[in-house]
Length: 612
Image 1 (tube, rainbow, N blue to C red):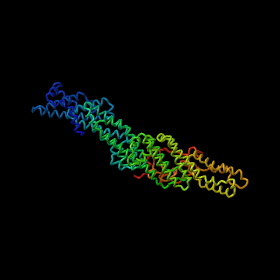
Image 2 (cartoon, rainbow, N blue to C red):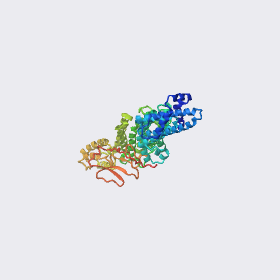
Image 3 (spheres, rainbow, N blue to C red):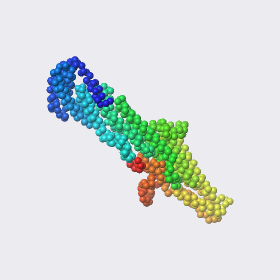
Image 4 (tube, rainbow, N blue to C red):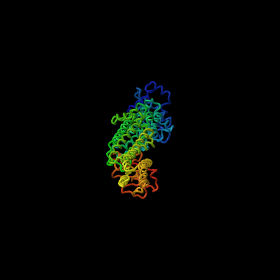
């Protein structure tokens, strides 16, 4: 409602009782002589001090003067015109004083908490409305309260003017990210304190007016400010997302904090005049939801289309892609509540049919569990395709052991298990066991087959085994099984395949020919394997997950070095970092077998190296 229209409504609602001349004459007859009121007003104006208290006598005299003015205006006598002009001038002077009094009282920062101040302001407002100065009253009220609301938002750390659409479009993501945090920090207080208290203040001060009038007054003060403030997430996700996976968590933060305040927003902005504010909020949530689903879809595609230079991991280590995706999903699981709403309807651009058929038996229950399980399946398929890049089948199996076990372990010890359940862990741990058996079978069966038997105790057969065993040991010096428990299990499997048979042959024929290895030597050599040159580290110098995986994962500090970046690696004390590397040093006694994996959860701000 426009200011002038609302002012007219307020004035009409307050002055309707004095429009009849006969009634006005009766009203005047019940009041003190008009000369007393004029004298009171003259005395107040001549001695007016903005710091002195406003007397109720002055307010009554002003109302009386306005009634006298109406009486004069309706009088047919010519002699009344000069009196009318003098009365109107005096009333104008009185209104100027009241306008200044209104400004002084409304400028008090905690006006909404001061009962006496509110009572005085209400009396001033009612007097100005009843005497035909509704437009002036509303203009003053609106200008003071709007400035107050803007000031309070600034004090909360969010400058409304600095965060308008045109200015936000020019910002780099690192700067905008700080603005997002400021908005999140300010949101709850803005809704539950600033906007709520403003509504309460309007209701109290304009309490003598109808509810529709009070709602309209509140709307003229707050609607455009609140609408601009609450549409900030829409501006962010529309312009700055660019489908970068790591920015998903910022959008989820925005969605979560805004959706949590929906009941408060609907309560404060329940009236029809403030409905545009509610519309802005729903629009922001819708845009956020679409952007979040877009990023999830792009994240899935980035896994499927991973084209990093490092197609395989040296020694079968955990691939950077695995580490990145699992930490991403761990962070994603923290947003179960908002994602449940966002993913309730699968977005059309994603592979909806595949996801729906994937969970056709509804075994995962929630859309969040379905999506996480689906992304894990996408990762598993990518790992299986990468395993085929190895020239050695045994190393392919070892690569799958390390990577799939890393997936299982992170699910088992995190909130992901609540989403996926024990069955998922059990099924994929069975896969890990099969990969282990496949590795032992493909990597050691030919060595076992070369062992001499009773009828083949020739020197050539002994030398063949020794040469083959030495060759295998040399080839596998850099192979690694990251987890110490699995490492021991594989060693035991290999030992059981080689050592018992070798010991039986050795005890019978060691005196008949020269033998290079004793059974203990074979066992010790086997148990010296699978340490690799980087046990406990993550392999991969590329981005690990398309264009986005080399960036900072805000919530977990999940950073994968890219070419030209500072790299991070594990070192034992005594080793030296290469130029451009940052070393994390641990004492030489640090038990890497017990602490085979270090998880970084250090939050690093403003380290996103993406180009805008």
